[in-house]
Image (cartoon, rainbow, N blue to C red):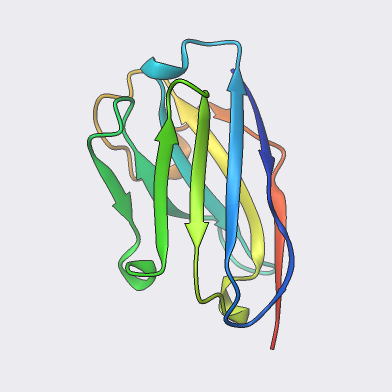
Length: 124
């Protein structure tokens, strides 16, 4: 699958962003997805995941209430809604997909297909 992220940019603390990930090349409805981010000098961390149907999802505890993951299987697009952003949320955000997405996979190494990443910068 080919994945293309969009929606990143420079925002002020407290602002919101919605990241999108458009997929092609595989049956979108069979893929499980995740959002993974990497800040400078830090390890990659999986922050959200969603099953192929969208019926189950996960958001990292520290981000619950501010970040929401969703998907539109008709539009073949994955989303990450990020509210009340702060400087700690600045990172490159990657969209990733895996086959057999009926169950949640919470380790980023389990994902086969990756986008190029989109930069999120938050100014204080």
